[in-house]
Length: 221
Image (cartoon, rainbow, N blue to C red; front, side, top):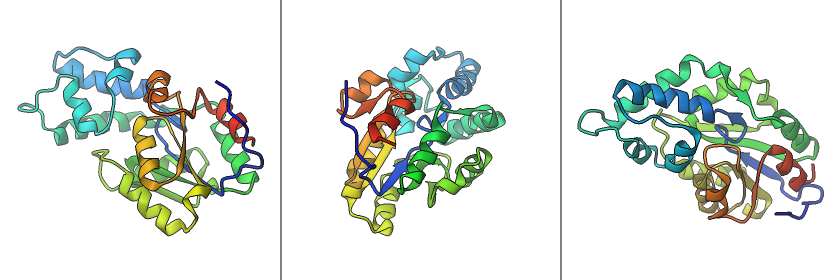
């Protein structure tokens, strides 16, 4: 599907999701979750099954995987998963073209921020690790490890930002990001290179691109 270009980047601010949108961590997330599943003798994930089952709220996703809530509380599973994820999180890479598109948006004169279900402190650490902090005027993550919805954080950020919602674009990789954008009252583009597959995204939204190169072409930066 072809999309019209947005001459001179008509948006004044872009809100990015992090995991799966800028950070390429899908396969690593599958490896970490398979560790939990293996220890309990449950069926393992491949990318196709992960894309079929992963969703928000994450609590429901955990139990769709077959975890027994009588044996494992969501809180216990979350701690176990995050502990596994944190062991080698520095091994994850950015999606191809991520630094370039951030630099291009900055050069075009728009400001940028990140709104993530990642823990706030860890988000700051990993964005700095990749040398991307100067591109953002705000990094917003959750204050816990349980990956609940970030919609209210998004609404609060839009109110603080002080721009008309029509001047703001949300970019993410899941249907949840679309829901958050709608909650914020802003436009949304979804990138089908992360935690939800293209078919699922296109079933909900008509502005879906395959990767950051296609997104950059769409934005005209």
